[in-house]
Each structure stands twice: as structure tokens, then as C-alpha cells.
Length: 357
Image 1 (cartoon, helix red, strand yellow):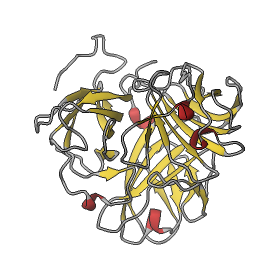
Image 2: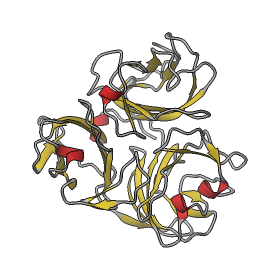
Image 3: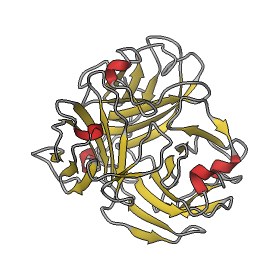
Image 4: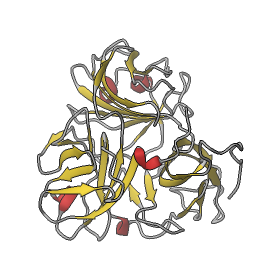
């Protein structure tokens, strides 16, 4: 994949205040050209607990799912009302716009359109941006194991999130660096639990390639007649990186090279209890990044305190605490990261440095 020089063409973060009313949120008044196809919103200040809200182009406006819950997709015209060319529109619901409350929104751009994908054994509806390594995939399950679903990326996905829209089921996540046919591991986005080995989630073959991914007959990924949404990501130089790191149990924690300054990082312990901790440079423009949200919890940042800190650096991120959620000695963690600034651009002639900190 080509190097992306301007990450904000495909990924944005916005802080805004609620007002109990409908309001249009603009990413940046000076650089507005980014219509999101996936939107994730969470209140972050104070002690009030509000759920995470996710919406997407395939499901359409006025619908949302909740990452800290197994609940089915809900319809509500007062939550995510529109995906705009320069941002998005929210209603007056407490999850997205309670008066005086502070919110963070993360947005990803695919193609701003949808099309039928016939690459898999069942058809899917896809909005894809291969350059940015991102697609939103909708499909209807048939309850049969080892079906294949087209994702449109033209590259093997390195991270997938899947949710049953029709019935209450857990959120499944997949990282091929962490999953194989012999170890069909799954981590649940809505839970703190360790990974589970379950062939029903990704199928007995656990096969992922440039065109398709597989699912088994688990109700969370392939319940008969239920509608599903999958968010598929691939590594893109200077823009996105998904992988694993090993904790060292020290405040001088491991450094994870990404090849860019991360704007957003999410980490989760794989073989043990831990939260899906989320950091970003909008809530923490300086280091260490201490403002924590968890994808599996409705708690605000205040509920987590200032431990579990890390530094967001020019070419990666580094753990600055020895807490179990991010840095237990010898434990493996999965991470998701998106760029604020590339460390190397498409005009640079030099190869990417290896371990600069």
C-alpha cells in the first residue's frame, strides 16, 4: 500500500460540548473535507456514565450500537442524525449531547458510498477505501460454518470488529497475527475477559486473505437471518498499525514502533483480564497520555484516574506505567493505532528507521 501523507483525509478526532439540542459538528473549520463512514462517540469528562455510541454508513443514520454492551443495534433520531461532508450531526440524546458535557468523536472515512461485494460465499454490502485500509461491511448471516465474506480491501485485514445488529450478542474482534486455524482466538470488545479459543467465531479454517474473511456459526458473527456489521482494517504505512507487544512490568515500559505519531491508540491484554484502554492526542495533547477511556466500559475518564499512562511519540508509543491493563511483565497485548503525523512521508528517500524513540 502507498504511504499516506495526510492522515486527516481518512481519520479525525473532535472534542465538542453537548447542548441538549441538534447540532452539526465540524471536524476543523480550516480543513473540513472528511465525511465519516464510521463514527464512534463517547463522553469523557466528569463522573457521569454514558455509553459508547457507534454508527456507520451501511446501517445508516439514526441507528447506533454500543461497544460496552451486547445490545442489538438501536434506532434513535436523537443520536447520530447524519454523516456530513465536513463532520456529522447529533441530536440531543445524553449519549451524544447532554448540556455542558464534553464528548470525543473518532471518525473514519471509507468511500462514502456502498456497493455489493460478491467475492465471498455470501454477498456483502461494502463501503471501502483500499488506500486507507478500511472498509465497513454489512452482511446477513445464514448460520452455516466457514462462510466467506468479501471485505474489498485488496489486502489481508489485520484487525476486524464484528457485531450482530439484529440480536443481543457480544462484539467479536480478530487480529490475524493473533489467530490461526489451530488457535481460533477471539477477544470480545465489550468485555475484559481473556481471549477464548472458539472455532464457531471465525470458522475452523480461520482463513483471511486479500478478498475475504471467514466466520463460523457463532450467533455473534453468523446467526441465521441476522444482520451484521464488520469494521475491517489493514496496516497502511504512515497511517495505521495493528499488532502485539509484550509488557515488561516497568515504568520504563516497552516501546512500540508504528512508523508515525499516533493520534489514537487502543490496547488490550490478550491472555488475561484487562480493559480495552483508549488514548488520543485530542484529550491528551502532551505526554504522558493519562486520560483513559475503555471501549468495554461506560465510565468517563475521571473514573479511571491517571494511571495506565503512555507516551505518544513521533514514531510510536511507549508505556509509562506498570499496571496490568497495559504492561504486566511477560504478558502479550494487542494494539490498534492510527496516525496524527507520519514519521516518513512519500517524498522521503530513506527507509523507515527501526527503533528511534
